[in-house]
Length: 201
Image 1 (spheres, rainbow, N blue to C red):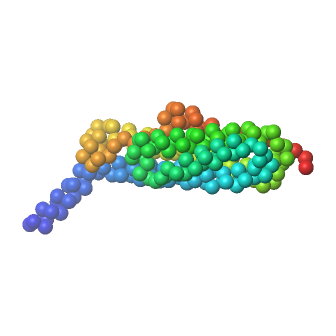
Image 2: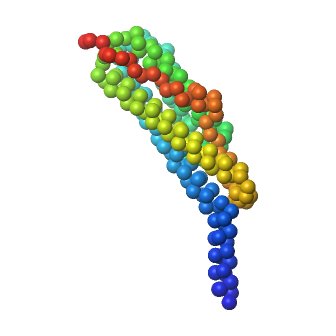
Image 3: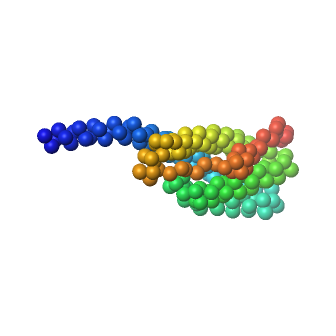
């Protein structure tokens, strides 16, 4: 009899958890983690491209020392932040991460404006390859960010809605941070890397 009672209680508990949104919260939490991992992956890809980009520009425009240094320093600040899944549960750390990425985007944009003054650099095959890779990465960052925003929006709605808000409270599920309007405005405009037709050699 006790075994049967335990089985009945287990079935009841499973149905109760399913009906109160527990499984939905779990699934949405996993979607957020996957989406955030892709955001981090694309930001890392961009960070990995920067040293080669800086070295290539330096080869043609060493006098732009200040601009190159700003890009290098911004990259160092962005990569110094521990980019882990835990960031999405810490609004302050999340904000610092986004601020550092925004600074890096601004520094890159300034560098790419400076490149306009160097036709030989713009026509360099290595630079143009890096340009194409950077442009593709910026596009992937934008797509990954949008997926993360949608995943967080769905999850946060579930956390706030009745009766799943009671389940969220019981199991410690809290609203997760997302890109603010200011973040999105700064980050959604990737640096322009289209320099048009390369100058003749």
